[in-house]
Length: 118
Image (cartoon, rainbow, N blue to C red; front, side, top):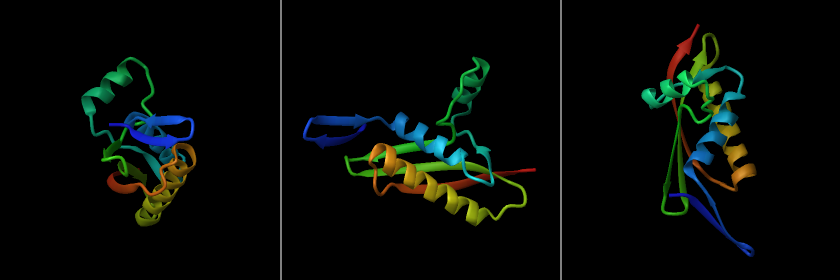
């Protein structure tokens, strides 16, 4: 179910895939992040085989009703960084980018650290 906004010009619908891609691209820019962990391994492996990028990898989005946007990020951090601070930077960056690009002001962002890369 897409997130919809009613404006004076009509209704705008933003799909969950667009939100996931935006959140993934924002997260990967953060310092201390080694990458995103795959939750759908078969789909992500096929994407890699065919040589396509998947910026929404490691991101799951649920829209409850039309108001509550829930974003789950599955991340891998670099060895030696403060995990808590890295997760907070990711949360702040994703929240800011979603507010600026998609108009989603208060997303519920959950971050799961799936591993550490040496």
